[in-house]
Image (cartoon, rainbow, N blue to C red):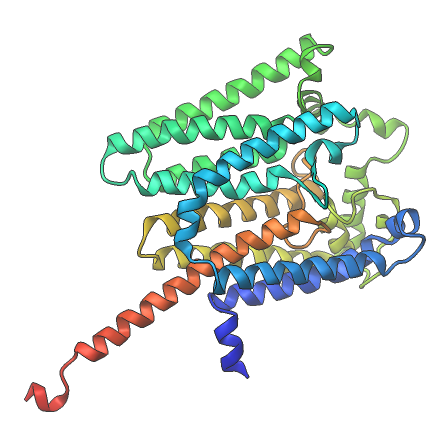
Length: 404
């Protein structure tokens, strides 16, 4: 039985174990944190969102198994330019659709609604842009001039994609662009190019913030500029909404405080009854309230192990493209996880990033599953190549009689 499972669940065993732990954590905390939502949206059926989460987790595992067992790694190399084109198209369509419907909902502005489903193009952008950058960087490792050209192409395409993402989600745009910069650093792009890009990014943020302050009626209405400025101001000076009631960030800090060392126990969260995003953006705070500092540290450790295993997989790669691709995807998920945690404990401004594979989600979970599937596929390919090399050594090695 174990042998049959090993043939299906290929790739890094530790990663599969991490995914199982994260899945179990996701189910128990989503069930606990969606009580208020269930009474508001599902007629009081508290099992509704638990069943929904189970469905998406099972679909996610299906995607991972397909990536590991069916799709060759080389397919991602060939499809990356096409995926970038699709990403840009869907981002533009999402903006047009939002403008035409005139719906002020934040989630509507981030989603593209199709005849039978809807999804957030920004989630596709995370994967496709990392694939595209990995492709260009893998083809530019021979000379410094090639790396320079790759840098310009990656910066240009990333700028377009991240600008389109920024129109509805600043934090995701910043997360993607930062990950791409680190990926270029790993690929030996010159420090001076990376530092110049960082300088331009910081200058752009300062100029946007200043312009939104001076011209709030015009600049502030572009994309998420007003929201970004407001969250920075709230983090530095305090949230003005505190005067009329407790804010979501304050509830999150209260949940962390109430959790103490060992927490209140499963299902005993009280703060989640007052939070609008306790099952998503602030789910780590609810987890700490129920499982305490010890539980929070364990969850953070799982993501650190993910990062560590990613490094091992990259070191075992014999091709640059899969190595860069795994580096980008692992860094992206790790950064996103720790941003969510930092927001929950009040260490950084509110950003609205879900906790990967734990927060309640729909299409975002499926794209996260695709990322895990790609990483596991590269790991399985490494294992296959290693086994082939070892068998070749055994065949070519002379036996004792031949040696004599």
